[in-house]
Length: 160
Image 1: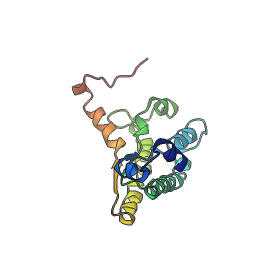
Image 2: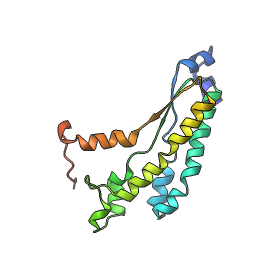
Image 3: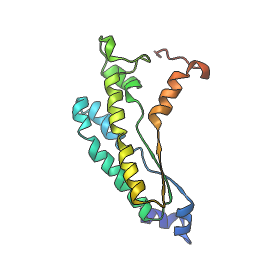
């Protein structure tokens, strides 16, 4: 990472980094996508990967802070139970498996579990009180769009 920083700021790199906003993530999403998709893992097996992903995110945040970052956004996961790839791959005739938006509840529970990343962020805030670290709540932002789709001129109907 230092090589990259050196390539974009020849002088006063530390000062530039202090004024920058860092987006650290979304890390671990591809691992989960692979595990649940091509890897044919169960949700429980994919959940076992989450602590490693959260630690990788925490390490990445600590690294950018070590280079001088003072403003960091760490995004969480989307509600993957609403994504067509998972709705197709985990399709079931059990209507109770779906929420009112026809999203798979168990997969969204997985996303919420991964979003326990918020605990790691709070730990980082305690360790680095001079740094602003914000959780980017993709899950609830996405859910807001679902709840307000008709007001936004969108439909929740399926595309074929």
